[in-house]
Length: 233
Image 1 (tube, one colour):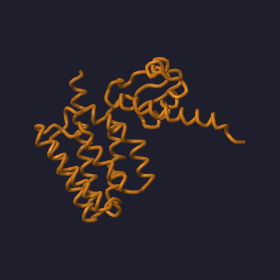
Image 2 (cartoon, rainbow, N blue to C red; image 1 turned 180 degrees about the vertical axis):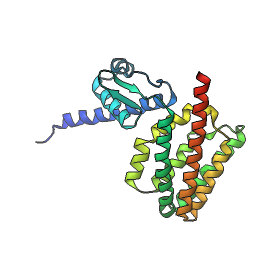
Image 3 (spheres, rainbow, N blue to C red; image 1 turned 180 degrees about the horizontal axis):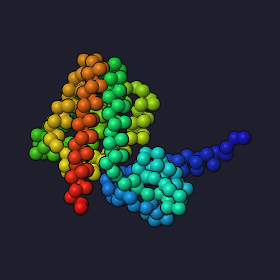
Image 4 (cartoon, helix red, strand yellow; image 1 turned 30 degrees about the horizontal axis):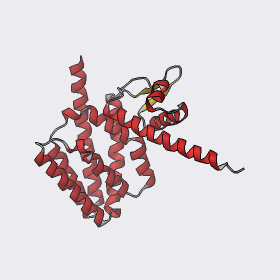
C-alpha cells in the first residue's frame, strides 16, 4: 500500500523538526542550560519550542540514544547526573575506540586531510598565543580534531559508536570541569604527535599516542570531579 504524498511530507517535516529540537536540547544540556538531573517537562518544552508533543517525544527519544536523558517508570525523563564512575567507564570506551580510529586513520586519511589538520593545529596554536592560553576547546577545536580523525577511520560502526553514543556525554563532562583542566599547550603537543604518526602511516604509534592522550584526559577529569565533589561538601 503506497503512502499518500501529503502524509509522507508531514512525516518528513516531523522528522526534521524532531531532529532540530533534539539538537537544540542536546546543546542546552551540554552547556548546562538545562541542569543535570532535572526533569524533562514535555508540556513546558512543547510550549517553549512552539511544537506539538509528537516531535518533542521523538526528540527526547533521540536524547536517550545519545545518553543525555534517562527515562524511568513513574518518574519520566530526566537529564543524566554526571558521576565519577560513569565518566571512567565512558572514557575507557573512548580510549579504546579512538585509539582504533587513529590506527585506521593512519592507513586511510588522505594527505590533503592530514594537511588540513596541520592547518587546524596551527590555528589552535595561534589562538593560544593571542588569548593568554585560553583553551581552544571554547572554539570547538578539540572536538573538531578528534572527530576528523574518527571520520577518517572510514569505519561506519566505529564512527556511529563514538559520534552518536559517546560524544555528547563526553562534551558534557568536559564542560563540567572546564575550569580545572591543565595546560592546553600540552594537549596541543599531544595532538601534533598523534597527527605526525598518522601522517607517517605509523598506525600502532598513532593508536598508542591517542590512547595515552585520552587516558591522561580521563585522569585530569577524575581529579577535577573529585576536587569539585570535595568543594561542594
